[in-house]
Length: 159
Image 1 (tube, helix red, strand yellow):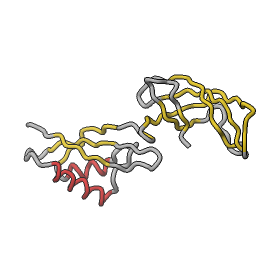
Image 2: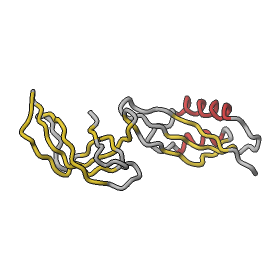
Image 3: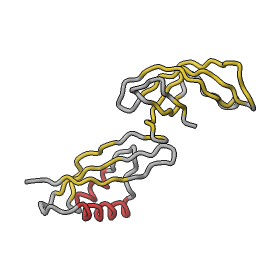
Image 4: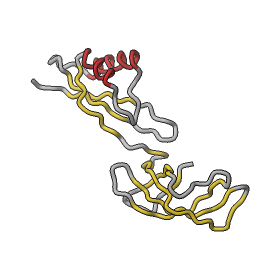
């Protein structure tokens, strides 16, 4: 039996870090139905159960709804988050050093970070950043940053 693989794209990203997860379904009716019909069935299940949210697993109830409409869930393809066109990465603060510069309840500090790109190898980098004196990051805290694994020195904190 030949399967036509169709994809449903659910775009429910935040303003800060927009990303898309793509659920891949296969037609189990053998009728070679169109992408349009799959989208209608996905809309029906979304209206009934709520659309699958990015970064989370598609629920068993949603998969069962789609299966009842003739579509078998095959897999989810995750697309990494971006911010202003740059890859969003996680960074753990390893060290924070005050430079002695500051203005209006903010200090300029050097942060040594362990940056972890999605699906990539972590690396360590030091960046300068202005931080609030009222709520500064601390050693061990995690920040969202933009990064470029091909150019590790290009790391920028996301406000």
